[in-house]
Length: 105
Image (cartoon, rainbow, N blue to C red; front, side):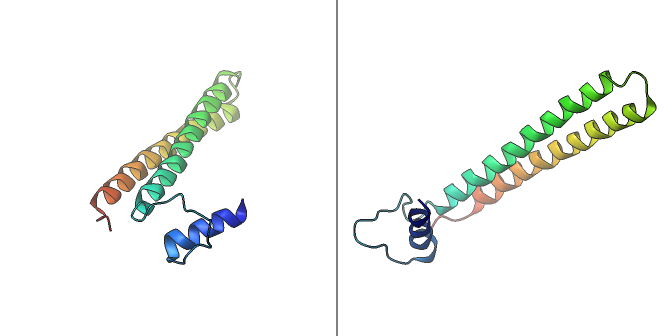
């Protein structure tokens, strides 16, 4: 599997010819689309993690029993998760804007 990925990367991005009988999953010019797909997946996972932290922060707030330390901890977790969610959304917009304006070879 590793050698297949190595050959794929060498052929697709470095222009090195593949050995006979080895094919590439990428067509010439598709590199930008695959990079966009990977970046969107990573950003989506970051958004999913931020949503999980919002839920966990809310759980911390609910189960804090009025302790100021746990209330502050839950509030800070929710605040940081919302900031992370905003950053992920902005990153998603930037990636799509840059990829849309990238000329295809």
